[in-house]
Image 1 (cartoon, rainbow, N blue to C red):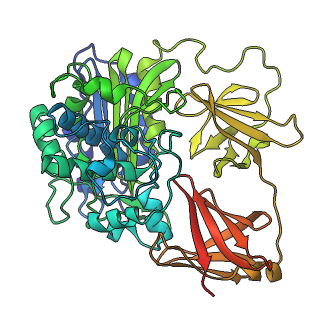
Image 2: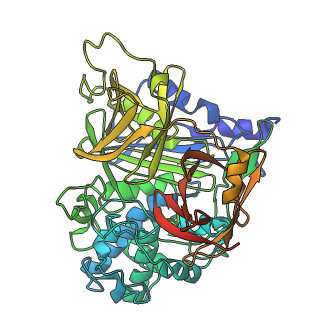
Length: 548
């Protein structure tokens, strides 16, 4: 695409000028190093990111890269409004905590006190467990997908609530496991509204956004509202061009829905050091790790991931929906934060935010942090660890690939700790071990095994055998049907308007759909396929019956 000369002139004006405050000016070399992290997006014909680096209560670097609108030729700026995805959860959590301070509810209330239409699963599910992501509620995005529905066209909280109440089972007994689920925070928004008689958008505006002066921040619960300076979002298109990837109809709040700016998030970040909201319980509640039934802490507070990066404690949440990507990464002991809001689906702000932190905090990171094991004389090629691994207990798939001498997981380069160990983005250790004859991997979180599984081998099933699985399948817990057919020697899944998926066999009567989910077929007493079970990371054990 041809670069706009007008846009190019704007891009190099004060809209993207670095802002330094509160300390001596960093060197021009530091500025160039930061710019190199975003160089691939720093074009007038590309969407990009708005960056804010906060130190001791003020911006020490603030710059935007790329376009807010490719159609209009408008550059991004620090006051461009982005859809922040799951960064919203900390604001939903804060609203619930502040409502508890005001006496509208208690964090230890049973959610059915406010939403009695939810099934009785034989266990009390508290608002606190939902805030800590340990309730067991299946994720409604997965439920929409398996129902063949497109979230971008879905704008009915009542329908999402109805879909949630159809679920006959939970992912896990409440408090037994940490499983990230957007349903928790959607339901918290519903409970808040019923307790306070105010919508989440109204309550958050009164209790958080107005007191902190966050004038460009809102929960987007009304799709007809005009949002000034909203950035459009994009995904990769054909021939190096971009495709529109955002929704003007999706207005579900709680798990997401926050629209905000780099400038406004400065005020939110400052509140974590000098709280101006409520009666004093907010920060402790948000930043205290959840506790499982067995007494083990999780790495999640209330809407916040509690982690470690290069030896420094971090408090973080990212966000992703449609073509929007965002990360808010805070180092509390250093009073240092990176805000990275993007309107490109491939922007990977979590990785970029850490690279920015490396530049500013390199002298404060322990010298040996994530530096590799001393004396390791033989370092295997990371391709030795590449592959797809299955945890049979949790029914979760992890995939690792290698490129340019690096091991990648979840789309990010993993940092090597030793010959067979790596750190993920949150400082947790992934270990590979082939001593038992097959390669296995284990992910440890808080000293507990979060994932443990063996690498899957290729399995071939002939087309004639695959034909036994073809047919229509329906679930009483969902809307719509799944259609399975054999095409060019592969088993192909179709449901609703979703793109067809090729299923890959991994064991007798078991298939994967990439890393997304597992399908295990059931047979009746005569050996005929009678149904299937779907297991996704945030929606386990959904049962379908064969209808033909």
